[in-house]
Length: 290
Image (cartoon, rainbow, N blue to C red; front, side, top):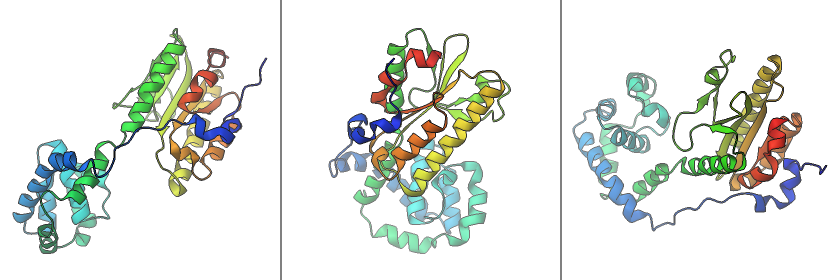
């Protein structure tokens, strides 16, 4: 029987095993970006002129009914008024009062914001380009999972692969196992044979990653693997595998490849880290069924 290669065995040829997503060129994106976001900047300016304070300005943004417009206004607000406020907090209408209480004292004054805003043209190419970057955030990850599902389903015709193929809610392990200790644990896909779960997986596309982000990702992966395998073993389900599908040039940065290799080596035969190109060779029916 041929010896199965480990993730670390691919490192010398790592560049050949990653998938590069296509991108967009600058400044080619500017005409489309300006067309898309000019209405946002116009609305931002109107609300700004009608506001008597920065907190009042923020409150008026949060009253915007259209969710897409409100999200874009919040992103512009962060740039002009409150760069220290997490944008995810800014987007939640229910957090408006809390944000004003926690961060309001550090908001830039409404007069200064108006002065700065008036120095920029409409549309402002610079901020339109920044907003354009947000537009496709996550798209590469969606592309990866969609292609992953296609590969798995064509390779394992008798198995069922479930999970959000593009945008959508993650699979919660509390919905997979009734007594799972952390029921809100999100995963990207589950493979089963119609009777029992065979594998649980996470999929990520890393365009550019390093430093603390790198440590956070690998630390999370170790925690999730330990949690899932611990649960499976305590319930007599030692056959359950954990699959981490990671791809993109971020894998080539820092110690990422070595860190993922270490995670796989901690649970030999139970955990596999693969790129999309490795799936046919490494996520085999024999392995899933063992």
